Amino acid sequence: MAVIQTFGLSKRYKDKWAVDHLDLQVEQGDIYGFIGQNGAGKSTTLKLLCGLARPTRGEALLFGKPVRDLVSRRRVGVLIEQPGLYPDLSGRENLKLYAILSGLDSPDKQVDEVLETVGLVPGEKKPVKHYSMGMRQRLGVGLALLGGPDLLLLDEPINGLDPEGIREMRELLLRLNREQGLTILVSSHILGELSKIATQYGIIQAGRMVEQLSAEELAQKCTDYLHVRTDQPRKAAALLERELHLTRWEMRPEGEIRVYGAVDTKAVGQVLTQAGISVEEMGLHRQDLEGYFLARMGGENHV
Amino acid sequence: MFNLLRMDLRRLLRSRSFYITLSVMAVMIVLVDLMAVSMSDPEFLDAMEAGGAEISEYDRQEGELIRSFSQLQLVNECFSNGFLLLVTGIAVTVFVSQDFTSGFVKNIGAIQPSRKRYVLEKSLVAGLYSGIVTVLAVALAVASPLLMGFAPRPDTLLDILQYTCFLWLPNWAFGLMALFMVLLSRSNTLGILMSLASGLGLTAAVSQVLPYLLHLPYPSPYFLSSVVREQCLPQPYPQQMQMVLFCSAGWGLVYLAASLVVMEKRDI
Image (cartoon, rainbow over all chains, first blue to last red; front, side, top):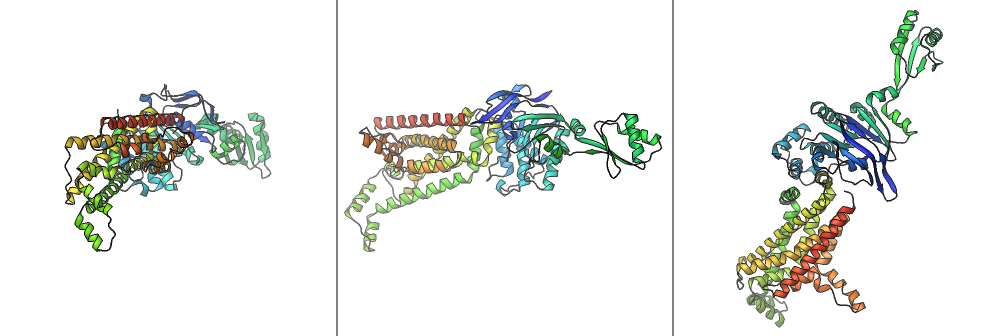
């Protein structure tokens, strides 16, 4: 079931299209990594999805209903850019206010549960302005979790966090997805981190969706080549070409054979072993998400 | 329904700015009353004169006048200068602008998508805030001379309530002006500047220039600061009451409509 669907979603600011005919689909249970360069339209898309901005054209559906539908809206938790918190109040008080705003039953109980979930102390009286960045981000996620949403929209939730904070946030999101079945759409500049949690990816460029793909598809696409080292490289190369009908391969000067495109690793191993060629090393060379993203964007621009 | 209002009331009672506003207001009222009570005491004036201060006949007449004041006339001395407007304007500005400066408005917008409802509930908050400020201010202004040992001619409770109500209405409208300024600028600077300028009657004064040059009638009597100064009086005439109602409702509706337009036009 599609939790988020957009059809030709567009948003224009003055003479610039921040989001341009964006078609995005997020299925239930996904952790959807939303990737794009600065100004690509990620935050605007998230604002459109949670109703903070109105589309110039197109439509967005949450749980099959228009974004303005209050019932579906209640099923969404949002953290856009920096967490919106009243600095002079404590974290608990901020959550309590949000609970009142949401009209939650037994808000105190839910607030305490959420504080525990995000790893903050319920009795903490310190005003939010004295919180560390990590505490603020966790509290921001806590706000998004109040009311038990089915979908989380998180814009750069790990921005400014230290490595420990990033790890905690990653584990929190994975736990929420695994244990509570939350669907999560998360945008982040830190692609290495995103690749550790995302099950689906959407790449946006200049407001347009360039590609949507699953983690498995990404893994396949990121596989550049199979590299093989043997004791008889020339014989091995000829054998593989003949037996497996390989067309795209090369012999590196140091004797490494590189086979490009889809190839059955097991079959390569079998053919070589049966011919009595000893395999010293064999493995798939993969691009990481960042490498793939940069290649997809057609350059070395920063993400 | 009214969740935002409930939330804001809770926040108001927990915000430092609320208590700072009330404290500043209380200090100002007590100082004005202290001055009035001192001026009304002939012995104090004699002592001042003996101490070298220049006390004119006018000062003594003023003192006599204050001695003849009713409770509400003395209260009106505190508020007819637009001081309460200024306090309300700044207080509403600071309170509402925190939604935008803290980013909490994103949470509000995500839960409650209707911008119209946001503006309407904030307008009620402005009404409540100005109401609290007005009631407490009048109560303190009535009580403080008594605490200083000065007993002006008593007014009936009904008169005091009526005066409070007619003082509150222009204050609420002024609070709506502050709300509009915050929604327009998404910060507190414009709201505070306008509260200072309008509350002290500067805009009313400036607005005289164009009609003077064009030989048109002056609009300044309809400005909220002028209404508070000239129409919000103890035991007002029906015409004065009508003027207070007309100007408060008029300006209130203008600012409410402007706030709705501004909020609808821009994304959060």
